[in-house]
Image (cartoon, rainbow, N blue to C red):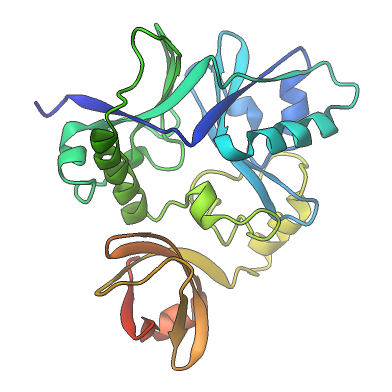
Amino acid sequence: MPNMKLIVPLDDRAVIAISGEDARDFLQGLITNDIEKVSPTQSIYAALLTPQGKFLHDFFITEYKERLLIDCESERISDLIKRLTMYRLRAKVDITDESERWEVGVMLPMSDVAGLGSEETQPGEAETGTAKTRFDGVSYIDPRNAALGERIIRKVDEDDNFSTDETLLEKNRAAYHARRLVLGIPDSTADLIPEKSMPMEAGFDLLNGIDFEKGCYVGQEVTARMKHRDLVKKRLFPVTFDGEVAAGTDINCDGVTAGELHSVQGNRGLALLRLDLVEKGGLTANGVSVRVES
C-alpha cells in the first residue's frame, strides 16, 4: 500500500528535556537557530558551536506539553548536557536526560525501504519542520529536508516498542542512510568532527540550521562572517564512485588533495571538498573516479 509507513528506530539518538521559565531565553543565546520558531506545530534543526564558530553538537528541537525536547546524538549526550549546564548559570532552567523515557525513530514510506531510499527523494506535500502531538509523543517532518521523512519521539512502552529483529533493522537503517546520502545530509557521527567542522562547510545554512536574522549566540560572529564575506571554501557534497572506497580516504585532483570522503554506503558517500577543485573536476580516490552529485 503506497501510504503505509514503517518506523525505523534510530538507536544512535537520545532525548534531552529542557524546561523552566527561562528555557527559551537560555537556548536562544546558545544555538544557531531561532528557538522562537519552535511550537507544538513546528520544530527546528540547530547546533551548538564553540566561541570560534566550530561544531560541537547538532540536534532537533520540538515542543511537547510545554517542554522542549532535544533529539540528539546518544553517544555524546553527556557532553551536551555538561555544556548546556555550564552555560545555565542562574537561569531558571531544568536540563534532564530523558533517554530512558523516550525513543527516537523515523517514519519512511514502505516504498523507500524496499528501494533503499534511492528514488523519489523530492519533498512531499508536508513542509519541513511541521510537527504534531501524538498519543504517544510527538512527530515532525525533518527540518533539514522533508524528503528525509517524519521523525518521531515517542514514550518507551515495554508492550509496544520498536522491532528488535536485527536483520530487519539493518535493512531499514540502510534505507534511511541511503536516502540521507542521496540528499547530501550529514550524520553527526560520520560527517561532523567536534571542535573542527565548520557549520557553513557542512551545509547548515542549506539545511535550515542557521537563522542569520536572530540575535547573538555562541559562535555567531564567525558564522556570519563566513557567509557575508564569502569565506566558505569547502562544502560537503554527495558523491558516487565505481569501486570500493573507504571512509576517510583522501580525494585528489591532479595530484592535489581536494578533500576527504566521510560517510560511505555502497557506491555513495559524502565528501568534504574544495569548491575550486569541484569545479575543475577529475576527482579520484585511490585511483577510483569520484563524481559529485549536485
